[in-house]
Image (cartoon, rainbow, N blue to C red):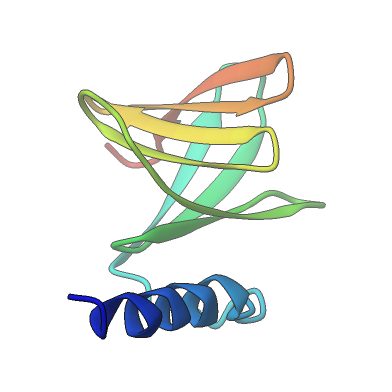
Length: 103
């Protein structure tokens, strides 16, 4: 076990220092357009461990986060949480509810 500790620590440090790939380079499982209750339109590129939320003038890259139900992604004071067919998008104190276009 003592030999594994330095190896595990080194592996964890290397993973933590790995830079995120540039926007638009993810291996997305699905991509869906949404419209929010405030009229905002966005596209969400869904991945297994991260997502990309693309607005008209902004792009967020978020990592999967713990949730009791639904798919939740968070980072930098922002959150995208899909639950029972709706997506809640939060940035700071501003939150909106979005539904998929075409559903």
